[in-house]
Length: 105
Image (cartoon, rainbow, N blue to C red):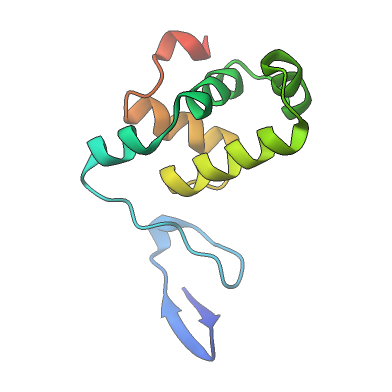
């Protein structure tokens, strides 16, 4: 499938699914240790709460921060892990051993 990007077409493989125009998944590096070390302690706290099914509001109340702060942490996690939503982020975090599987149960 091809998508328009800056008046040029970019090839997107079928195995990657369909993405909105202008968005493409982050390139995932094979150096997992650099991704693991770039996630802050507070981002890991947010990640654990996402894995437990908490909403943004619940995470903010639990961590005693504003909703905007939680959104910022989530945005940083999406960028660092190359994901688009909470489910993808939790899956990637389990793959990178950032959170144990027992956190999600």
